[in-house]
Image 1 (cartoon, rainbow, N blue to C red):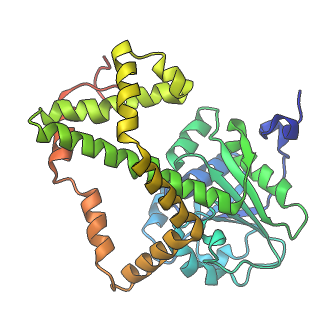
Image 2: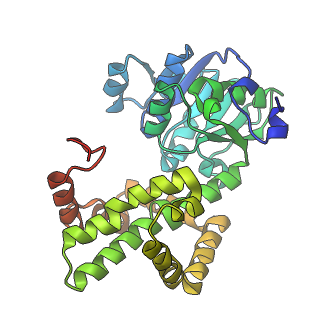
Image 3: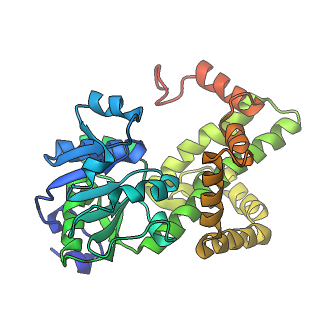
Length: 341
């Protein structure tokens, strides 16, 4: 069998089995919950660290997890930063008493990349970024699999940062899926660009624009919703399994010809220029600066723009969302309850 470096990836058999000592998972959101539960099931000594009065404390205890405050967590051997990015600067001062040789493990590179947090000189600082949401990390672990992850070592104070990081990846199940090495900065840039250009920004905006075009031309909103959004999952599943060329090999000749003629019209030179500009904003740190300023202003009730925009993005009182509710409630879609067909 090829070695990990020769294969280009690390897996469970490449990761040491180490006693990491006491692990404190800071936060109990999407990722924090999954990490805490996977660590517990793997036999690690884990607790969830929350601010006093956090509404997440009851939820963590309901999962039979130990809960502590931030002051207590400062004595842990491993600190897993699962708090929201914008909360990291506020939380960091609580950990000035962390002792030498501790492992500071981040699940995303933003705060470290752009200097939102002052890193201790006497600790290992590493990154484990699961390539998907916490729900997927947990569900794959329970099924005996694992969610691949990107790894990085920013500071190796003890000389064993890499080994401890790989041992952690084994505990939470990511090593089952496979591990690849990166840097804090690269993970941050690629993650933000993917979210904005494709996953959370570009695709939803394209779907909505296409739906608006059909409905604006007088077509049935429900049929337009199915075509532009619901069928997207079926095609995405093919892309996930086979790649884009593999997907194209499974569609009709009419769809393939339409892909050839329509794709370039929608994603042309102007769109590509805008994508390059978007990437430049992320790589320069301008996006991170704006996000930090907006989140800080919101916490001080100083800037109403973002709360209003967030409410619009999450709002359900919209013709597009109304069409979606009808489609989900009145048709039997795979995975949405009822009989699959």
